[in-house]
Length: 272
Image 1 (tube, rainbow, N blue to C red):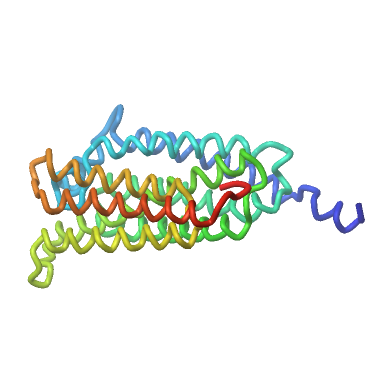
Image 2 (image 1 turned 135 degrees about the vertical axis):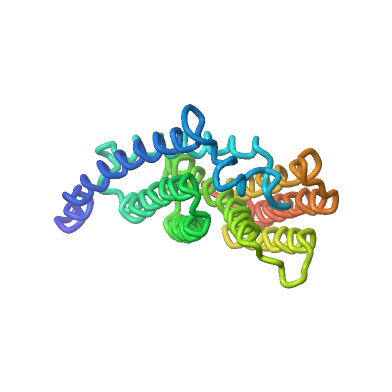
């Protein structure tokens, strides 16, 4: 091994700082999410801002059980934070490229919780759009730097894929809730029409992501999960709409079918 190669693979001071900061950031973000969600004390997010984010506030709001996906995402982020802090991960190029983006997503997620708890829906929209942009960037970087191990595939690609897919749904719901609370009249379109249009757009974006990513499963699974719970909410909640429910279920099916078709067409790959 040459001297240049040895130097390139040796941890730098910034690598150690990155590992520690990500670990601390994950702990703070997860504790903040637990407390800020109102699970133990305080007000549940569905009840803040006059209930603007509740399951029956808009036609694209998912039912309450949909948010259980956060438990999986946070578990993945916690395991990632521990794993990336290992000495063997300090100088890995993939960690250097992705680590700061993961940290940014943790901080933005915490900022979103604080903004909605403060009733600042407009600010929450800005934060979740920034979070979505960070996750898209991270996903692009993951695609450019393929996984090298099972841990890579599960803790980085898997967790960030679920994170991205769910935040895509959450962004649509958040923006719609803000516009509704602000009195947006839909330019003459009915709420039903807007919901159908938004779900169609989500289906197109989800399918496009599946094609671009060569059939990555986790973003599509999380996206379909959110869409299905929108459908459930429109059939069982107070804001009923069979057309919106059918469209939500159809959108979820389309995203999953496109993902499976791409995976079948591409043939076997080394890792996802």
